[in-house]
Amino acid sequence: MEAWILAYVLLVVTLSGIVRVVCGFGNALIAMPLLALVLDLTVVTPLVAIQSLLFSLFILARTHRSIHLGPAIRLFAWSLAGIPLGLLLLTGGLESFLKTGLGLIIAGYSVLCLAKRRPGHLQNDRFLPFFGLAGGVLGGAYNTNGPPIVIYGLMRGWDAPAFRATLQGYFLATGAIVSLAQGLAGLWTREVLAFLVQSMPAVLLSVWAGQLLAGRIPAGAMERAIHCILILAGGLLAARGLS
Image (tube, rainbow, N blue to C red; front, side):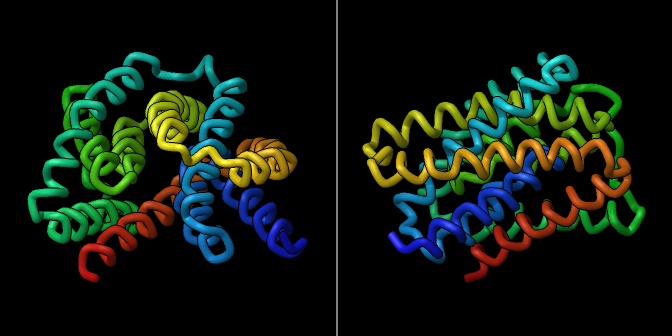
């Protein structure tokens, strides 16, 4: 392996990890397309999945006291229920419609929020099943379960520590299942494990740098950054549906 490839991988892991630690999500959205430019997807997919688990563990180690455990567990349970529905819809010929529609909803929500026209605030967990199911549908169909859960946390008005911690609890549970399934499918190859070991300094560096930044970024600026990532995620999902 050429030295520049490893240097590039470490840079991408560091930058995407800082985003994950500061905002609570988004590392896979950044790392997957950038790493796929130099590595095969059979390497990138399990590598990013394992790294995402590590990020969740490291963040939870610092923020676990702030987690809303009940909502995290219920969101996970409803997401599990939504995964088969996502697979069913994916095989039922509605893939393009779902990608485009859900992508536009996700991006549109954040556009409205950035325009100071927040669609609404949830006073309780009454609508939690809807967001959990939506996360499961997107996860089962497109491996993109994060945006509905992120939007739910924003609409519930969780403060920054609770937002990051609760997301990590959810992502840890769902990510463990995905990563284990990838391992059982034979994707944990020597190449993947070698990149994982070599990228550990970048993972630790990004956690350290992200924690420093997270304490310095105003709440409003962090929320704007989260909405920008959601717009990117929704736009990419809609573009895949139209392509």
